[in-house]
Image 1 (cartoon, rainbow, N blue to C red):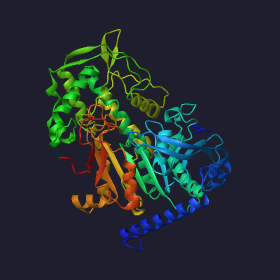
Image 2: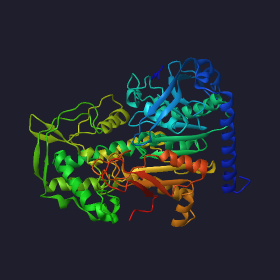
Image 3: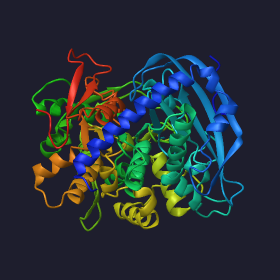
Image 4: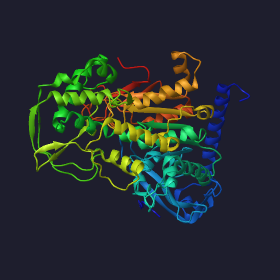
Length: 569
């Protein structure tokens, strides 16, 4: 099917890796140069017959590529608009290719692949796999466009879900209401792996190249997908740009329900306006903790230690009326209409904010997961207005409800009643999820020796004010890798070794895979993939990550981010 059509070690380890890097670079440049002699135009290679001849039929054992499924059309002078996670570029020419494969022995298991291959003149010897978001395994055209901006082939997959618009929740339950584990494994790691293996070999054949550089880029679920590959297939990618990964799924998705249970526990349901006032006060109060007043909370760690939402009690708030919307809105199923509102912040609303920041505890006082940092929007605490009663009510996060229903209870519904639910219920669901999906969806394996030994590089970033995936989840994983990889080294020595190939950057003021509208002066690392490319291909270790203020008033637009555990001051 065609989803989119456009007309227009005997040697010491470090020595071994250095030799490998320079050897690979020489091969890649030579192959690209030879290509430009043998294939001088896009039109000569963007044909079904050339695509068919370039297919790596034996690249992945157990699958059969369908040569009759190929579609190909040349696209000229394409313009990729800049996004929050990529730069823009015009004048791009590429071959738009789709094809499919089946898993041997399963006649109804068709998986569709989609590749954009730059013209021979614009290809820079690179291949890029892109990830999805939410329960979707693909980001579609946006991810593919990001690849060709960097002179890279870019690929994505539908995961075998039957449609490019289907996500995992559409296929995870079989017709008899049982778990479809084939779909689960495809989403968890298998489809991205197959896409990548096929894409790399296909690219080399397409361009008649003996070598290329391979990369991954994704954020949120796409970030989890990236780690699924780095952890399982160490030599698959030379570099990965991974943002705010949604790993630890058993925790992550249930945690979306936590804020509503906090409200229910306090028997108080604040308007979104009241919680927005608390958040704005938090930003103002914690802004200067890094020594700079710019409307950006760069030290949410200090804010959590020293600030209380009680400071907002008695402060006035006011918001205009809001119209109703349908569908998912910030992971909620819908947005109810809200009247204009004003009032003063209550002690109960402040208590709710403090409890959300504190994290998740059961009735025995045991903490079973973390929560969002202060200055992150209270998206999961968003209540809905009941026009019949004139009151606000707690609302279950859409994706949290999906997880509990489809993956824990194994029932196909998006409706989840919060009545009577407690923190212990959340803990119980987390434990069930861990037991069922630890090997597939948690994606927290910390031993990255294979990736390290293959010379891989990874830049991992996460917004300080992420309201969807707790920033601390990335810090916990980064620290686990350090301890597993360097158990006999001290703190400074182990970080120094880790930073030779894996760096984590916390982004001041940033929300989920994007800047925060409440902190517009916050810098955002829009061009992370280029930093990874420079690290892999030129040996430029990004000790400070480039970031840009995309929509603010500060004159200090171009900034550089500290590599964790260093903190801004």
